[in-house]
Length: 447
Length: 31
Image 1 (cartoon, rainbow over the protein chains, first blue to last red):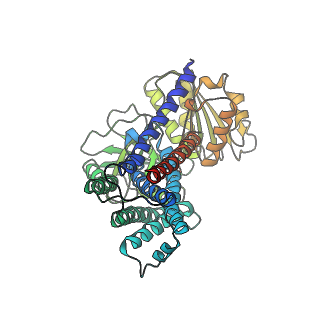
Image 2 (cartoon, chains in turn blue, orange):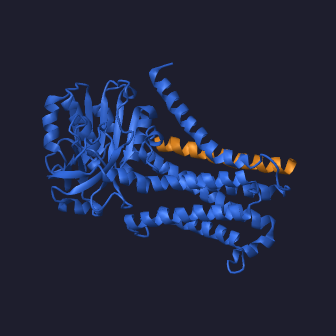
Image 3 (cartoon, rainbow over the protein chains, first blue to last red):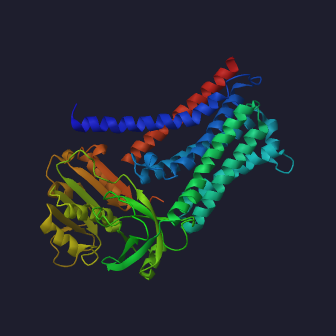
């Protein structure tokens, strides 16, 4: 088997193993209900609707696990893929939870009366509360942009609705209790649900407590081309952490780490630094990022990291191809700066899309690095000035063919930029027969 | 593309969860 095929197989097997673990968490508690004495069975559709209700609640609980920032969960995939999965699975969980009463109403029309929350028993009111919270949660997640809800407000509401949906779902389940007569079954379901909620508390309370004891100080605020600012931060009273080039951290600039919303940014500095100092380069996108320029040197900040799978494989590729759009250059800068510090002479091609020549962040430093490394930089300008003889437009398969030597599947690719660019480049790589295991992509718009 | 792969895994998960729920119901009715 060739190296590429073996890598592809490992990638698929790892994916399959994770699905198996996930399914065990969803289905084992469901089938545990069949152990021991059982209530009298009802018709097929009622039993099916009950089964999908239980599965839906288990999946809702597991959502807390996906976003609990456990490195062993997210590392094989990358945080952006995990968040994508989180969103997709929520759609499935909602479909199951909504189908549960719909099927029941269809086969037992007398149950429709339970929709009247004034007369319904508490166990039905909890079901309604859980379902409505879940629908509101998904609608807000899907249309946050369209409804112009501020990210910070949305995030707080998202957590509140998720907690309400899961807690009310559990109250409904225990209240109805057809399958939860046995105390151990009740304990299993309550315990599992509390465990999932506990993961949220871990991220929001326990982890911030650790971060509080490991603050950072902003040591320098540097303006960069392309309306971007670099924040250099040094650990304050501790050794900091080491990261791999391409990884990112959650930054809390104002307030305490208990604040609900952190912001993920790639490290742009060299990973070879041994003093714990890290840099993040942040473009002004008009939201929270517009306030970065006002951060005074000396300010205390909190950094949770490192995270992300946007790092080079141990197996050697013949060439690293870095494809950056706009501020997607930041993880690439970390990679080339680390190469420079380690005197790493592996060949690197950087395909870098910017709006104009003047807005090319790190332009001068990249020019200097091309002399020190086996680095070739190809700038692709959207709005080139008169006389520009380089590439123009957007990075596509034609640009790959002009600037990369075949065989394309022998290189390792890193892609970071806006969603539309990422989609186009992933399609182009597919067209060049580059297997998925050969490239890393990270979307900076994942939260 | 990893997202496409993740989408396929999600679809497989959906099929399995619904399939197992059907099995659960069949077992209950048959028992």
